[in-house]
Image (cartoon, rainbow, N blue to C red; front, side, top):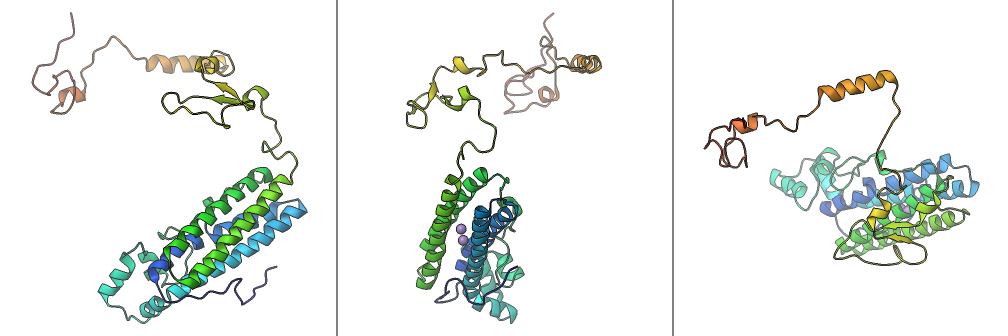
Length: 310
Ligand code: MN
Ligand code: MN
């Protein structure tokens, strides 16, 4: 069961209201890399986890992310405090309202529809969606995704910190940013605490393709590095060697029943193209300037339709 503690995980001290900054902060409330997404990601992974250690960690971090959601939501609420009261009491003049909701990216949806309170949307007013969460129920894949999610959340906090001079907000955001660093470390440890965590899943890769690097983009700018050269790689520069990779004929085939073969032949016959034909089309007949080469001539409509060679 969940309990609620009335104190925040970190104290929120906002110097002065700032609806435009509140709008930016919404990115970490209901955005793709925000706290709601993080909480739901780890909560659902934790519920589905059989390993007691990972289950405990995921539910610990999920619950902490909800506490972060509470902090960010409180920052948004404080930044909108004045706006919310003025909206509710009808104190804003039309021009002031337009200025407030239209400038600096502040979303009208956030201000008018949600009355200045935190809503489940991002900084552009886009509603939160479960598609932000990409869990697959395989810890060696999900932990890697969690590591990347924490890395993204850290970067978004870093950018938000640069957006404000408010020392109290900078302080709280610095805490939230740092917690994402700690979470990333836990997920990295949990991933590498699984023996044989690479490749993901159970099926082994096909040996001769697992170390093949294919230099498919060739020309100026071709580079070598540990990602494509050295003892760990079979580097393919001559693409003829791997087209196709299996040394087969590179065609796609399927065995059809006699009935399917017959119908497929009928379809092919009905839609057969005649490469010797020279049809006049609507594009030829309606061609005007800019049509390119047509049967009516380059400039369109200036020469008569050619009659087919006798
Ligand atoms: Mn967080
Ligand atoms: Mn986190």
